[in-house]
Amino acid sequence: MISNRTFTMLKPDAVENGHIGAILEKITSAGFKIVAMKYTQLSRRDAQEFYAIHKERPFFGELVNFMTRGPIVSAILEKENAVEDFRALIGATNPAEAAEGTIRKLYATDIAENAVHGSDSDENAAMESAFHFSGREIY
Image (cartoon, rainbow, N blue to C red; front, side, top):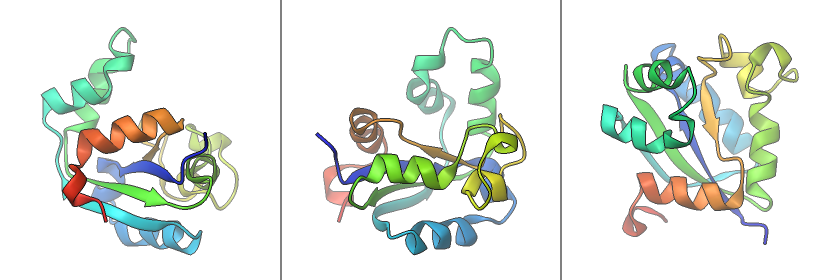
């Protein structure tokens, strides 16, 4: 079943570089409605838990360090076919391979610091949303 919600995080590099407003503008201009949003910072424990799927990969430590070095903006977005449409909007993980006009092409610096996270499935969108937001924080 296709969901109408997805989860995103504006990563520390995007926040540090002052791209919050521009990225949110691209998201809302693409027809996404923000139904939950917060400005926060992940603890080491939270980052390790959120990215546990990558625990055995060689880049795990660097990923945790990156994601905990500064604040993030987490959000739940709503739109028909949200996951697929948002993945298209953000572009390829490697900004060098991302399509022109995508968020990563515009605001990411490299494959490790790629500005934004987007859920890759409806199931992960639900889990990632629940990780960051309680039910009463979603409108």
